[in-house]
Image 1 (cartoon, helix red, strand yellow):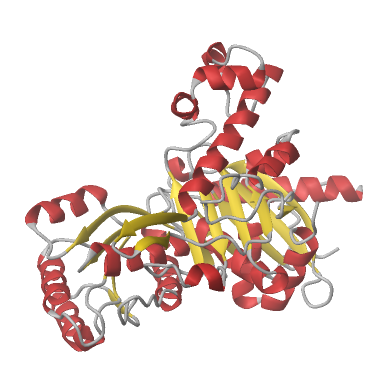
Image 2: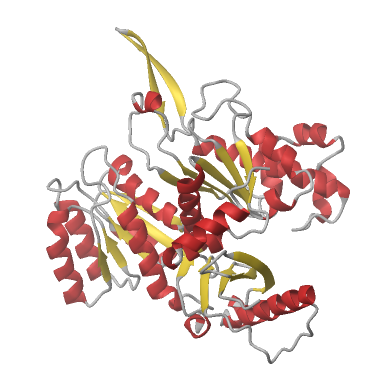
Length: 463
């Protein structure tokens, strides 16, 4: 069968290529290929070509036809997501931390960025030094509600123009400043994107326009990242940050099956994506706005790079009791992919605890305060009580033999009733077993109907 679209997921260590066909009729997933990512060799095309070769071997092995390395796959379109070369590194700068800075962070995280630095108020010399150290791919400048404070955002724009910073800047602050900010950047001959205010009024988030512009800026400038040279010579369609593509897939799937939570336990981080407006009951108790589509990334929770520190966080005695053996010696020869029954048991429990802690941090809580009028209850953070589906993606939660038990346990986290999370065992479990959520997300930009079919067919069926 002829391949219509290839989607490459260019990771920090591995490049995966997925093939899709029948895009105009009944879209299907044909298979995948993988190869080491070649960032350190100066050009990701080397790894892309190797992954495509592996894909062709896999497809031809299943069809019984001989492999011919000179025979191109002939896909009509080649798309990509990337988290290589450090992913999308961003810094965020706004007026008030709990307002414009937080809104900018929500937009950037949902777009798939890694936030390395954030400031509130006017930028100072030591802030510029930190920006230089981070060397962001993109800077987000917010500040002031529409027709509110103007001075801080204008000061920060002027400082960035005067400083030797080459990263493009997205301005999403007070609408009254747009013309002045544009004039500053034009005179300084620096790259600027302008969009709607991310925090236009008190307690109102306006995140989606900023997310869309972050994706556009990422695509415009991804080839400037080390090792990403020449990516456009192979990839002729959309390029998105991989976590942003997963969020796009989650939002697409939400339209098909309803409120959901996506959990991705990785070797170094654990990502949580939620798409839900929450319940009307909790909305009455909320003290600050939360986005409908929210992503959090926990850099201290992973099952390889951070495995030992995660074990220390959980407690070696507790882990040892859970796996019925001494956990500490297993770390003496700990591998990225479990190589022994002992490590498999340990990795399974670490995956559970990474997901448990990440979900607990992502979800809001009910808080009680006491005053002259008696006890009052407030909701703080993201309301997940309306979630009806937990979607597992990533290697650990879709490959471990005992993953179903881990996922079942993750549906029972709210035993105390104070967590803004569904009641125990009231969530259905879905698995991205073919690991194509990022591919579905990037497909959704230009092939939304086909992406919906693929999401329902390969992710949206309950286990």
